[in-house]
Image (cartoon, rainbow, N blue to C red):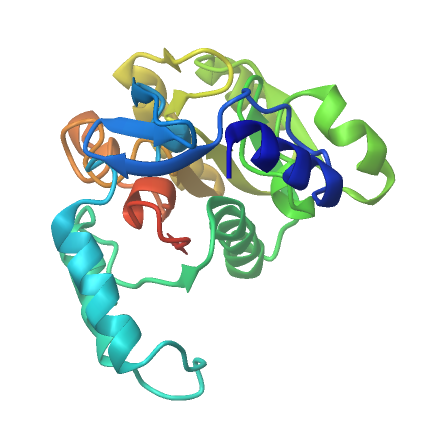
Length: 261
């Protein structure tokens, strides 16, 4: 099929939720991708920060192919050697103090799970999030995603979120001083959709102290920064702190749909 044929077919049957570039990709290897008409491109986008190891890394492809021929799927009702090894490896690589993993299918599901865990642990319901952050489009994660155009159609059914300026620990402290119903603070340590913004280390360290003082769970959404993208498994490590929950996806699976908390 040509690019034009693929475009017509997809536009005819898929809901138009994303504006696409006029390219139909059919193959990838390393840092390059090829379209249906044989044109090659250097990929600086990586499928929105997914292809951390490049496209079709041979070891990942071989492992997936082997598992597909062995057992494609079974539910959580039974034990799995693959899941057991993956959970143990995540616990080994995670910052000290984080020793358990939960697997899901995407980053927004990971954030949903983290928010549910925080509410269950604290017995509280409200959440503090950062202006500019993006945490996903499912309802729980959407409630913590900055941007009125994302939230407006569903505002009536979204859980309560208090947004504060990114990098301003004093603003977080004021909210916590006024309210005793905050279950969690969730943030992207480096903001993505907002334009790749990072706060000084003192901000993250202050959040850790505030959470400890007020019995609030600290959630690092590392869907984009995690799994070594910033030089350590979690960006929390050079800050010298440990969040209560870290969410992962994207590069965690090198293109295979997977998320984790």
